[in-house]
Length: 406
Image (cartoon, rainbow, N blue to C red; front, side, top):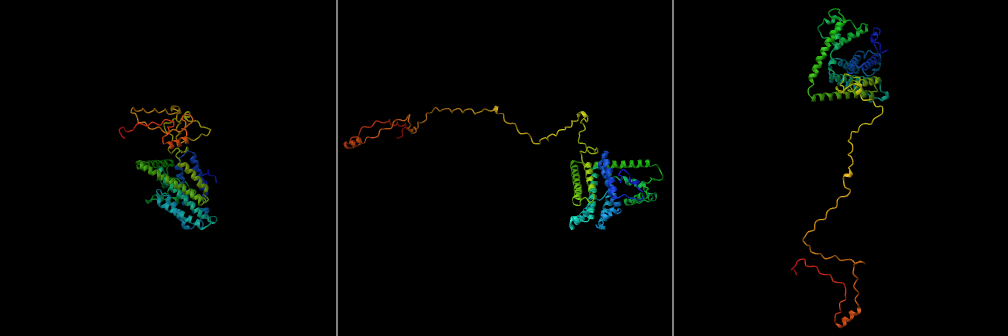
């Protein structure tokens, strides 16, 4: 199928297949991203169309019916009801999320009932479809907090103008199911888009201009109400945390669909959705002018002020501080100065006896002579002492430490 050709060129009654719709939406979404349009708005618009595709064509596509054969009619009906609930202007987020989690849990339990090679394809397909619907539900909640003006009933007002006159004369509120059923019938008859009738036949450009004017007024009113709700840094921080949680859950849901169910024949689709999601939520994306620009406004954008691109790789700057410089040894003396001797006191201190001297060859006196055995024997016989033998001078006694004692 040529993705550049519109689906309205098909013959009346020939409905596009599942793969045709997916390929067309993703190719146009990628083209819108390349054109520099708002990626959040583009991804939201194609998410809404994907949900309408699930609601209107899930059970009418023969390929999808063949894939879902064996999963059970109640589970498939539950999936389509969640898609119908998500198609409302303000869906019940918690209720739809619980139902989708139930479908994921029921299909995941079948993964343990079979070997993975024997697992029927329908359970992997139903798990993948529920995971994709849960992703769109989380994405709508994130985009509603980011851009609330996108969720105004744009197509709702236009379809009310396209609705036949006999239905307009009724005062009852038109349901989304009636509008989708009428649109499907008109597409099968080859009469889409129909002409516009508002009390008579008028020019379409005037009617579209009135609708666009009303749409802009509703968007501005919704934006003013959204800005009035944001007060204080605490509420702003809380909203930022909620956005981060939604983004983490979105990525986790698609990753589990790829890891556990193998993508359910939607691996390429999921990979492309993740790539578009990265472009839509990245604050530093160059081709996303609708998100905050980190560049300051007062910076000169002239080419002369722009830094030149370096072709050589550069080292990353170090985060740790540099080590302290070594000490300057020239400012310190090599050796400490000598300590001055303490002053001597004027009071004389008592003299202490000299220590016993050890004999040495140079200064010690000669040893006393040995006693003569003959003289000792002579003195013992005569009874008179022998004369003293000359010897060294006896040591002098030191003065008394305490005078008068003794």
